[in-house]
Length: 285
Image (cartoon, rainbow, N blue to C red; front, side, top):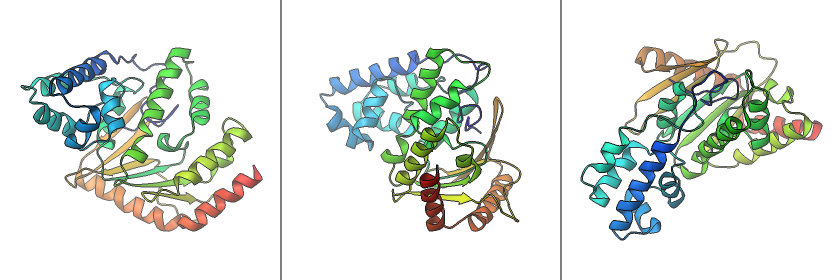
């Protein structure tokens, strides 16, 4: 599966990734808008009928967001679209700014009811500030062009809307202490990053734990991982390397990853102690 965390993290792709196009997303959005207007519905009237927020509907109509499967099905019924929306959705195979190996996971991520992330290489994309993410893209090799950087940055920031638009999704993050001590981008970028993470930790649906540098027993030595629970309560996993991602659906492997993640939760600092450590880092940076 896919998380595209390496390089610039979370499915943005590197210099060798294929170029992305948003034309199909824009075309799909125009079709949705046309059928919505045909039904004489405003976005404010349409959004609750498909059980998505107005900003999400606007993003889909503008071609800035990949439509989840349940949105397509509900929109098809609400707008009486003669199968047009389902047919058009089958041709949406590309997402702007996202690497090919991350698209499947990104779509599942947008519908998950639980999302668990352990990371030891860099702060996960969902938690990054714009300054931190930009520094990752600028440092990427082979070098990216300005247009590529802006496209990937836009995709990163768009994904972060999930944290606010899906308040009923539970997010758990376990982050290595060294990710903040590395000071990627410099002191100012790190201070902004720590403040941002502390702010996100105030949301009821987000839990952030820090794995201390000194940890004699660590269940995550095999590397980063992500786990999610789908709306039909199926658990899936994802692990990512350089220029590749592994989607994991085998129940035995997913169960093993769940076991490791549960153990890391007990090995990491508590929620309160993690936030206390981040506050001390903010003051010492």
